[in-house]
Structures are given as C-alpha cells and as structure tokens.
Length: 384
Image 1 (cartoon, helix red, strand yellow):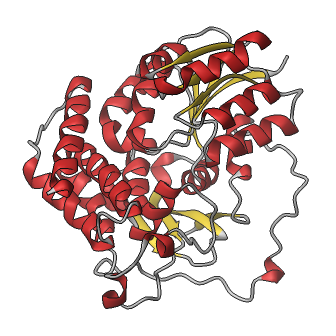
Image 2: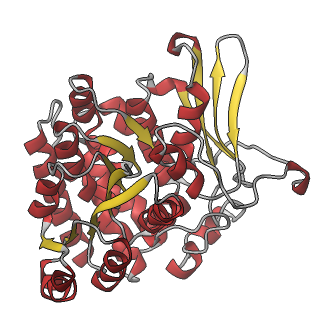
C-alpha cells in the first residue's frame, strides 16, 4: 500500500518537487491532500494528475473555479485557512509535507502534530515563529519530524547513529546569495530583479529574497536550535559559494561530518518522504572531480545585518522571532513591488521590534496576535 501524503503548498517550489518525487515512486507514495495558496490553475492541474481525495485553496475567492473543475471528477474541494487546518485531522493520510511559505504553515503544522501525523518540515517559519511551543508539543507526542530544508536535512543525516552528547557544533552553510562579492555601498541600490537571481538554487521569490538578505540563514539558525535541541552559541553559519556541502556537524573529538550533494531539493525531499531511508535517483549525482575547489568563508554581518537577527531572536526569546518573521513578510513583499529599498528590509524589521510589545512567555494566541499586529503595523509604516 502506498504511503499517503498531504502536501501543504503544493504549487510552490518545494511542493511541485515533492509531487515529482511522489510521481517517481507511485508504488510507495500517494498524494491524498493538496493545498495551495492562490494558484488555482496549477492546483487544478495537479489534482487532475494526482487525483487526491481533496484539494484546498487558501484564497476563498478562487474556490468557485476549483470546485467547478474538480467536483465532476469526484475530488472533494474546500477553501480557506480554517479548512486547511481542519484537513490536518483527516484519517486518509499519514505524513504532512509542510511546504508553505511563511507564517501560514504554523497553525496547520500544530494541528497535524496534535493529530499524530508525521511531519516532513519544509516550512522553517513554524519553528522560527513558535519554536518553544512546537517543540513542547512534540515532546508530548510520538510524532516524528524529518527536515526537508537542505541544510537541516544535511545535519539530520550527519547525526544518524551519533550520540547527541558528543556533538560540539552545528555548522550551517550558506551560498552567500547574489551579492556576496558586492561592496556595501553597491548593495544599498539593489533591485528586486537583481535579488531574484540566486546563483545556485531555484526557489520561490520570498525565499530567494530572504537568501539575498541572509535572513534565511538567520531563520535556519533559529530552526536548528529548536529542531536539534542545541544551545544557540553552538550553531554557526559559514559561507560556501559552491553549495555542495549542505551543512556539517563537529564532534567533541574534533571530527567533522558533512553531507554533500548537488544543489537539488529532490534529494532531501526523497530522504524525508522515505522516512530517512535512501531512495534511488535517476539523476546524475555529485562528481567531485567537476569542482576544482570547495571554499568556505565567514559571513559579512556588516553587509548583511539581517544575519544578526538570529542572535537577537534567540537571546531575547519570547515573541521576538515572531515579530521578525511578520515584519519580514511585509518588507519582502514591499521590496518585490518597489515600495521598499533592499536595506529597508532590515530597517523595517528593527523598527517593528521597537514598536510591537514584547511577550516573554507567549501562548499560541499570543503568537497569532503578535503576527497580525506586526503585519498591520509594518503595512502602515510602509504606507507612510
């Protein structure tokens, strides 16, 4: 019997690659639930191809079109954020791939954990926004979480068979983005078109901009802190422009284990869906002879101040990371629409941290309220 999968964010970069993997192993996997944000045409195409039990669109304005296309085929349809969260409690799937972008992944993931679903985690913001809350839920649950992000998948793979007590440090690699070699003054005038040209990875617009500011790497440090239950001071980022070494683990005896591979998200997706087992790939693998050198360098936090927000979020705790994430969502959207400069992304986030009330021990309701308050404040700030 195939392993039944729910794909949150099925029309995005990770979601479409997840469906690629499901298609490659029809005897092992079946897409039972497909969830998209607003790309109803792509969702309809995917549903016709994969024949899930249900297809859900977050944008309720697109529901009529979805229902008209799929209900004659016997595919159930629904719309809205409440329907997405409720779907996580269905009994016709076992694993959820959380491939949505941003805060939208938090509530469905929490519902899935409470429903006892296995989690293939590609939505880093779930642990960025509410890491303490989510990890406390996981401690009370038999649910397994396998990361899909290439960096966290690499660390996960390096830790297999190792005693956590022997881990000295987690080393998260970063490509450095498109502006790694630019002078600081030149970065001040970056355009959205320039920032969207990532040198190695093919990702969605939001994640690509986060990579360019290096806030994506700050988020990955925060995620790693909760995912692997390790002190923040034992996590560091290193720039690795070739994107072949996806991350490393240093042990107390001085040994360093690394996971290498070509920049292709199908590999960590296969590993997560396969429940940490190795599934064959028809694609050409890594050939080290093709690379004359693999280089590493310290990230420049003066050029990329967003990277410093990881330390701030983990030091202050509470709802700090939630504020950072929400302000960044507004800032990136404004930058992509030429309403905010590239340096303005960091500036808006730091202003939000001053203007949004700090909560030391937030509940889930506090996280939700903080997110919406920050979105409202940041939107008004840009408007002014």
